[in-house]
Structure formats: structure tokens, C-alpha cells
Amino acid sequence: PFALVATGPFVRTTELFPTLPPTVAPTGECDNDDVAWHAENRPGKTCAWLAARIAASWPPTEARDKCLSLTSGAGIVASDACCETCGPFVTASPTPVPTTECVDDAVWHLDGTPRKDCAYAANKIATLQWTPVEARDRCTSWESSTNVVAEDACCKTCRPFVTFAPTSPPPSECAEDVAWFVQNRPGKTCAWIANKIATSWSATEAKDKCESLASGDSVLAKDACCETCNPFVAPSPTLAPTLDCTDDSLWHVHNRPGKSCSWVASKIATTWSAAEATSKCNGLESGSGVVAKDACCETCSPFVV
Picture 1 (cartoon, helix red, strand yellow):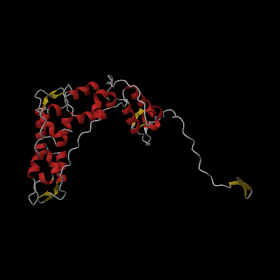
Picture 2 (cartoon, rainbow, N blue to C red; picture 1 turned 90 degrees about the horizontal axis):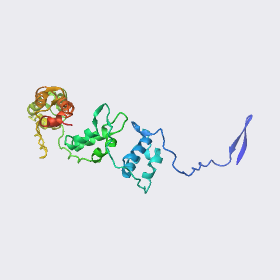
Picture 3 (cartoon, one colour; picture 1 turned 90 degrees about the vertical axis):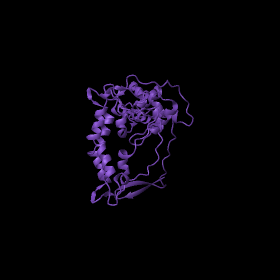
Picture 4 (spheres, one colour; picture 1 turned 180 degrees about the horizontal axis):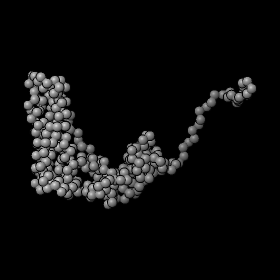
């Protein structure tokens, strides 16, 4: 099928027939797992990690979900890279394999914080110190020094919450009026108020400003800048009847007896900006690990994240 063609001092061959596309050999059995593969931004989540989790705790449905959803930075799905491990779970009719009961890992803990282990998470959930949303967020974000996430290590505690899908609140009709500004002060807009609240005003100042500042046509800031002002002028939300939200008179910051709930309330009213109040309420802890937002719920409720 070739012809000789003279090209000066050389002779080359050329095909008489067009080149056909190569025939792809039929695929055979799955090769071994790709030892270099790992989930995107999670070097510890390799094929070996998947195999260990499947063997230790994941039921077939969860194994199938992970194999089909985890991808590498290059977009390679676990089911393709870890075909030997994932094969039984992603085929059309997977045969369930026996799995052991899901139990919490007794030695796992949050990286850098040994006391925050599975038992700590279980206690926070059991005593209602964490809402379902908080439980889900911590279970899916807390990692050990070896990149093992709480939802995997503390599967018995976390499993009910990692599948929890909170009902989204109805969309708010409140929207900032971008054209509004304080009478004779074009620079004092809703964005200006939002910046002041975030950086310098205390909650009391924010409330006073939102309820007193008005435009030239007498529209108050709380009405024009409702998204910004609502947390400071809207009535406190009704608490569930099972949760009596009152500040704990015995609570104080670890090794700081003077920094009690009343101290937090005073700081919010006189000194802290909304951003500072949010940071303190969600960050300050007692010696037993109780966070200010839980112990001082009446004071901190507007700032809980």
C-alpha cells in the first residue's frame, strides 16, 4: 500500500490509502488503584483512604456516593482512579459487602486541640449546645492533623447531621436603598452605615443611628437600609419553648472570673462593634469549653453565626 516518491537525493514512502483511525482495544478488567490520586485539596484522601473507610464504616450507599462525587484537582473522579476499590459500588447492580457497625474513633481529635474529640462533639450535640446546622458544619469542616474529617472519624455522632438539609428561610423582601442618604450628607449612605456597624459602632449606637438618621424626605435609615439595620432594630426572634434563653450567671471566660455574661453585655452595649461582638460571642470559652454564645445566649443571640 505504499509508493516510492523521489524528493531530491532522498526517497520517501507515502501511503496510497487514507490513514484509518486507530482501533481502540476493548477494555479489560480494572487496573489497580491509582496510588497518586487524591481528592482535590485533600492529600490524605487517597484511594487507600477510601478503601479503609469502606472497610471500617461506610455502608454500600455511602461508598457509592463518595466514589462518584470525590474528584481530584484534575477532575478525575474517584470511581475512575480508584476502580479496584470503587468497582463493587458503582456498577449497575452493586453487591453489598459486609460492613462493620459505624463507631466513633476514640483517638481522633481536631488538629491542634486534643480535647475536641468525638466525645466532645457528641456532648455538644446531646446537650443542645450545638444546633443541627452547627453540628453539620463542624462535622464536615473539623479535620485532624492527618486530614481525617470529623464526619468520617466520628461517624456515629456525625452521620445524622451530615445528611441534614436545613430548610432555607423564605427570601427577604428587604433590600437596601442605594439612593438613600442622610439629609444634606450625600456620603452617609446605607453602605456607610454598614461600614460603621462593622468597624466602630456598638450595638447600641447602631440601633440609635438606624432609628434616628433620616433622609431629606424623612425616610429613616432603618427603613431605607433595612438589611443593614434589621439586626439592631427588629424585635428579638421568638425562641423555641424548649430552650429558655437566659444568661448563665456562673459562666466566665477561662481563668477570667470578671469576664462574665454581664461583662460581655456591657462591652456590646458600650464598646464592641457588631463584628467584635460576633467574634467574641462565638470565640470566648469557659474552662469547660462552653462558648459565650451558648452560656450568654440572651446577650449574644443577635451575633451568633
